Length: 79
Image 1 (cartoon, helix red, strand yellow):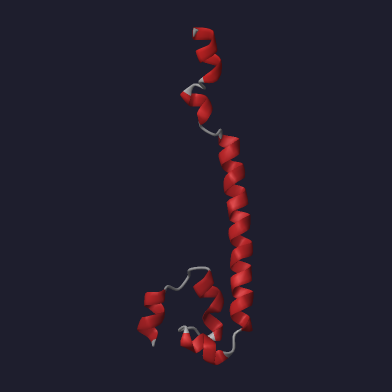
Image 2 (cartoon, one colour):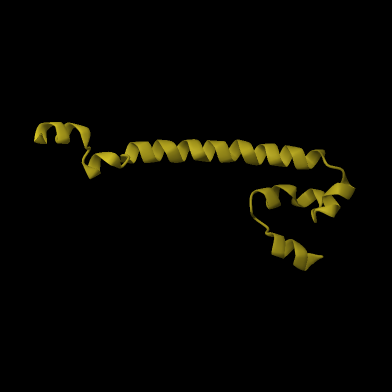
């Protein structure tokens, strides 16, 4: 019975991903974020100035807003 239990239940240390798996996962998350942000910038650049003004942005602030350099509270305080 103990031989069967040892083969079906993985030890706790084997359940955690290794350092390489964590690094690889973080790498792909970073790549995905990069493309998502690029798509957001491209989409916002397609908006006309009136629509950007409605959401509280100026054309020069698009990239800073997408990349999180300026926050919504900072945008509100400058208006």
